[in-house]
Image (cartoon, one colour):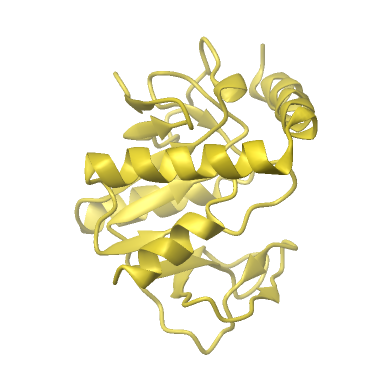
Length: 189
């Protein structure tokens, strides 16, 4: 299957899974994932998350908890549709709609370099290859972050988003871990 075909298949799978869940089940799953990541000690000083769209795994409560525990939290920020993705500080203040329709911090928030990057995804395999929305923002940003120093990239997923094999292009940046509410997977190359 091509990446485009996989993206379409797994978006439907993720959407169907989330639609079948009760809100309390979703919240318990988010709590379980937070416990897994906290217990593994993977959440470093500056954590970059994201504002979930549609049926993406929503890390917002986990990010608020981490902020309360003293972590610096950042979210993706875009100046415009052609600009590179940056990360801006988020401390629970209201977000604004960005150029791609995602919620992002306001432009006056300071830029941060994360040590831990929580990555949204449509599908992922156990080698850390992921399919996102298809724009390549996370691959380019992760490549840039890795040239400047260590960063841990953790894909957040529901079990139904784990694929047997995702084709990787030369520019794709593999994740270091995949976290689901049921398990934390150190990826293999």
